[in-house]
Length: 347
Ligand code: TXA
Ligand code: MG
Image (tube, rainbow, N blue to C red; front, side, top):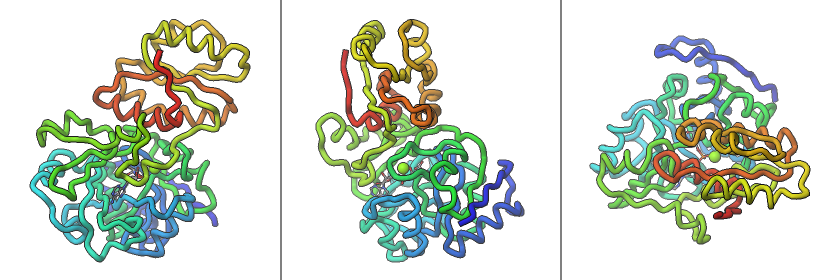
């Protein structure tokens, strides 16, 4: 298949943009279009079509029990897809949509099980990226879109990453440069009485608490205890580079001495670390700077790109540094822990 790659200038008014029109046509006809969102690039297809959703799983190599997120442009679209929109769900939508938050609702029959991985619930997100919303409007249907990477690879934060993974197997890639957040959306299940955070993201737990009061989360369970997650996708190996990866947590001096010990005799190793640690470290190894420890947003925006780079550079062993698990740092650490397969050393 010939994959079209098109740049679009991100402006508020895109309803007459020829690229968006063409992409909308492809989606209406059951094709696959990768498009930018404020979190990561998504691989879009008509969420109401069994065949179109099926193509997403095939292109990504994604297990069919891992449900997709349906992206909407307007609240009107939501009512046709889900039952029982609670007061708490409405408060969250008012506070964080459009934006990097996905909500889980009970699904109506119109949403095929192919899109929800066989579940009776459906994940819905209204992205803030103008191109994403213009595209959904142009298609006229909700757009199912997982991150536009091959299953198991880091999520794409640039059109080039999508090209690396999916060139030749999808119809079109819309290029809008690097995404803003670089981490996937916060997922909150609002299908039951008490909302639960299933995946941490840029909408932090304290931002959610400001709207709802106390909220529980379920993603920590599997982390160090090995219990199963509620978002089916969270159980799969994720973001992992080909290299063996070790996450080090604790005091920076101890992290350095541990790296020195563990890297003894290793020739082809890398460090993916903060600017602060890089300034203290004097040993060998290829260095990839995530950002300043005091700027976890920057780190969030960089880690997937760096993990891809580490693979491209052929590193065999990579040490990465834990950051404070607070605010968006919780989402960053969630992705780092998965990337290293929970291979964590507390120093
Ligand atoms: O930021 C994002 O959310 C990006 C952009 C493209 O919007 N999308 C994304 O999709 O990250 P994906 O497929 O990579 O991750 C979707 C996650 C998976 O962990 C999946 O299991 C979970 O959402 N999910 C989807 N539907 C669900 C449901 N009904 N119940 C529980 N978890 C669900
Ligand atoms: Mg993904």
